Image 1 (cartoon, rainbow, N blue to C red):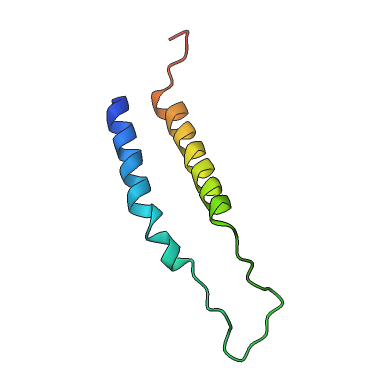
Image 2 (image 1 turned 135 degrees about the horizontal axis):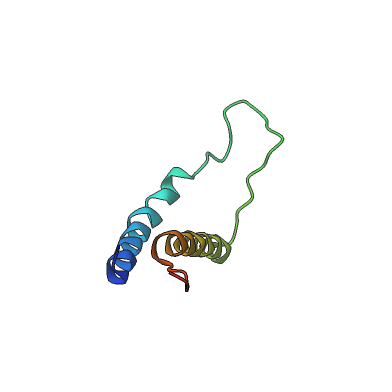
Length: 75
């Protein structure tokens, strides 16, 4: 169906296109104007953010492999 080279190229392109631009959209203002909230922003270490992102992409890749590329031994 798909070649492995095409799949890895597509996944790499997806990571490169979405990896850097999504950080800017996740920014929150430091203080809301005039409103107090019970929630406070907690700054997370960059290594933790990267680890969560890599683990999520790994799980997505695993699902793509399972449903698109895996061939059962009996078929």
